[in-house]
Length: 158
Image (tube, rainbow, N blue to C red):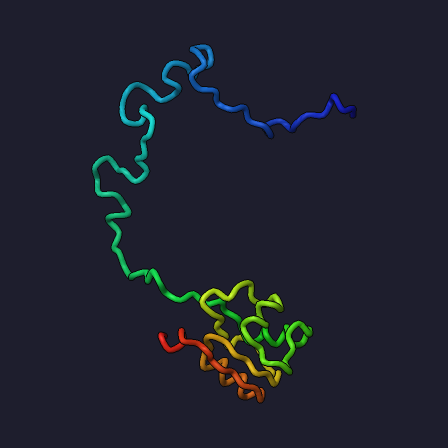
């Protein structure tokens, strides 16, 4: 094989549709849009339109409510914290704060705070201070001989 013999596989590169380039192209004059009507014009957006029938998105029942200013927490499981302590990425001798969790790479960003959940095994005697925690997580840390303190004004709002 030589350099001048190199080419794409068949069907790999699709030719662009060149619209409005004369009758010989097959897409001249009206450019494949047909004659007159709303869809032949530019600037048309009729995505959910069903010809006057009530559109599907309006027929379906609406439920629930999205709170626009709700708190979004970064979630961490106890099992992962234990894994990072075992790997030496988090020092259990010092207090484990939200900044320490971010610095270790366990959490990407704090968001409105970090919430600890009880999934996984936890055996380290550690002092953890976070924005929120489940009851199970608090019990698991205390059972291991540690302390989990919730230091958040956001926890009172829950």
